[in-house]
Image (cartoon, rainbow, N blue to C red):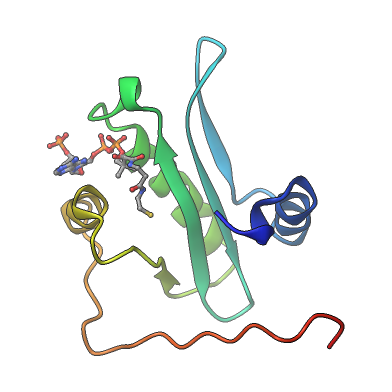
Length: 116
Ligand SMILES: CC(C)(COP(=O)(O)OP(=O)(O)OC[C@H]1O[C@@H](n2cnc3c(N)ncnc32)[C@H](O)[C@@H]1OP(=O)(O)O)[C@@H](O)C(=O)NCCC(=O)NCCS
């Protein structure tokens, strides 16, 4: 989690990417969620997460299918997700649903000074 996950931060993301993020509702309980969006060139998913008691029932698979369909419908050809390298279950999930590792890439990040 980061500052981007504040209420305002999530609201900004949803406003920029309407109709591409989903929750899984299990009789009023929040079973899972995904944040999906794109920058006009590539799609990005964040926080694919399923509550422990609802795991291994295809909830994440279904959430990802929906957000991928919504992003692809906007004409976006490729979608990325960052996964921590030590998240074994996460890595197994993405591989199981047909996403492929990008071992040839290394991500660089930069945090602009506040006010810049
Ligand atoms: C990873 C996570 C989202 C998977 O959610 P889920 O709803 O249990 O996943 P699904 O039931 O759709 O799984 C689809 C397939 O992925 C694979 N998979 C899912 N979880 C797995 C695990 N813990 N270990 C190995 N394979 C796994 C399986 O092949 C599974 O199919 P199967 O159950 O028929 O064998 C969930 O474990 C989670 O919320 N983890 C914590 C947050 C996280 O790590 N998110 C992903 C990183 S971005």
